[in-house]
Image (cartoon, one colour):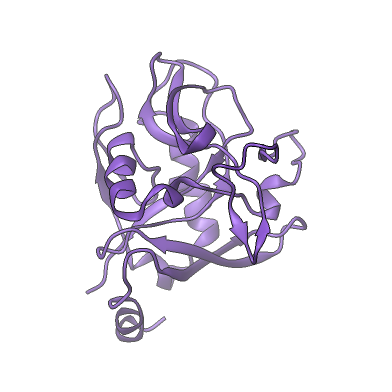
Length: 211
């Protein structure tokens, strides 16, 4: 990937537009496809749904296995060497009480960040429907929960069809050490997500460094 071409292609993107960057299993059969990222700010921050889970114990974002997975397994699987050179290491605050600031190449949004971004992008930013790969049951029994009941307030529409919706994790610690904030019913921000829940989705975020 040539830097000049990459920069010219993505520098003019506006918040709300989408870019293809990296690849990851997305179909129910595990086929690697281009990851579709939403541009959140002109700085190049984006997000895309996937699936993982947090530790089932009292632990902060600094030490949780989800952070380690995003910055190791996911990072190395999703991006090649040429793509990695554009990913900025981001200093993350608002991780929760007792949790130090962190440095991450890939991260989850915090409560404060989501509220600020929702003011720009509207409620639709919080709507999420996972990939076919995320919904498929894994060997360990984990699969993404998909809400498809009558309350359609936060349904995602794809190609004119209702795709349902799923809840997804934020990195800010919740109302107890074993809880984390998440986006739940009606696109609300909830503080009581139990870390043992394995059906919530993950929407990774990163900042692309455009020279």
